[in-house]
Length: 189
Image 1 (cartoon, rainbow, N blue to C red):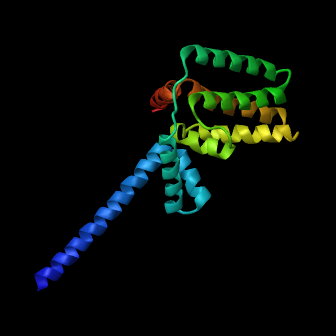
Image 2 (cartoon, rainbow, N blue to C red; image 1 turned 90 degrees about the vertical axis):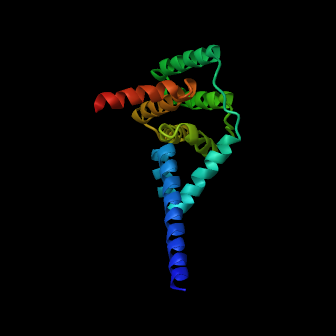
Image 3 (tube, one colour; image 1 turned 45 degrees about the vertical axis):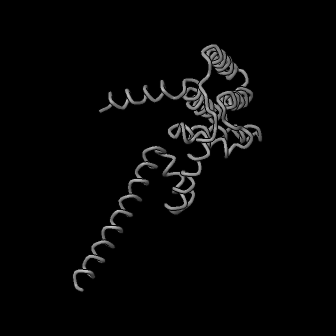
């Protein structure tokens, strides 16, 4: 009889340990996959379970999207349009920022991301570009402030830099930008 009780207790301990290890592995996978976006979700939700559920929903939604790379000629056209937008910044910073915001949305649309709602756009792109989605949020917020007449020229300059971070990732499927960051981090070590 004692052996049965001991066996049940050992089995229960093993099950609890397995559940804790599985949860820990899921957390580590989400944290690694979403990077700084994991911390943002945790801050937004104030609860690890809710934050992780939100990130899993994003990942599941993203799996259902048909995200595709841009054709080389389309990529080149967008790069030229970005260069023209940057040039316009000198004479018309507000207009250039609005144009940059629209240009990023157009690239997203052409890649297959839904673009109807900004928050959903940011959530969708956070799955593939967790390192640069915060740039997008900051740039978009400045763009909205600019439309209301509440952004300084320095704010507008920052918006262009932020838009450029996501634009580059989207344009080059993230591979080039991620490779550049990886090389930079290796050089820093």
